[in-house]
Amino acid sequence: MSPDPRIAVCPGSYDPITRGHLDVIARTARIFDEVVVGVVNLPVRKGKTLFATGERIAMIEDATREMENVRAMSFDTLVVDFAHRIGAKAIVKGLRAISDFEYEFEMNQLNRLQAPDIESLYLMASPTFSFLSSSGIKELAMFGGAIDEHVTPLVARRLKEELAR
Image 1 (cartoon, rainbow, N blue to C red):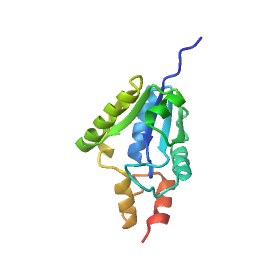
Image 2: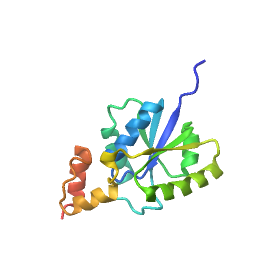
Image 3: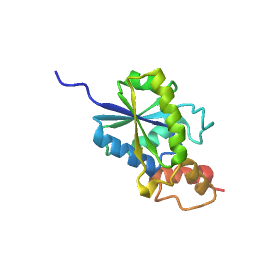
C-alpha cells in the first residue's frame, strides 16, 4: 500500500491570479504531491470580486496547465474544512510584507483552533513579485498601466476588457 499523497491547498480570491501567485503555486507544487488552488467563492475580507468564480478558476487553469499536479477548485467554507474535504494536510500561502504576516498570523491561530491537524506553511515572496497584488494590478489596468509582465496573457486581456476607461 502506498503512502497517502501529500496534498496542499493554496487558498485565495485570485481576483485575478498574478505571476506572484503563480510563483507560490509552482514552488508549492515542487514540495507537495498535489496542490489544490482553492478559490474563495465569496470572499468576506475583500468584498465583491471583479471576476466570477468560474472565470477565476478558468484563468488559474490556463495559467497552471503545464503544472501536472495542480488543480483549481472553488470553496465557500472555512479553509480548514475545505482542506479536510480534499484531504490536504497543509495550507500554503505567500507572504510579501509585514502587513501580510500580521493578517496571516491571526488567521493561522484561528485555523489551528479549528483544525490542529492542518499545518499552515508560508513562502516568502520572490523579490521579483514582492510588490505584486491583485488589487494593484487592477488599479494599473484601470488607468491603462503596463500589466502584461505581471499576469498571463488571458488575465491581461480580460482585465483590459473589464477595466479600460
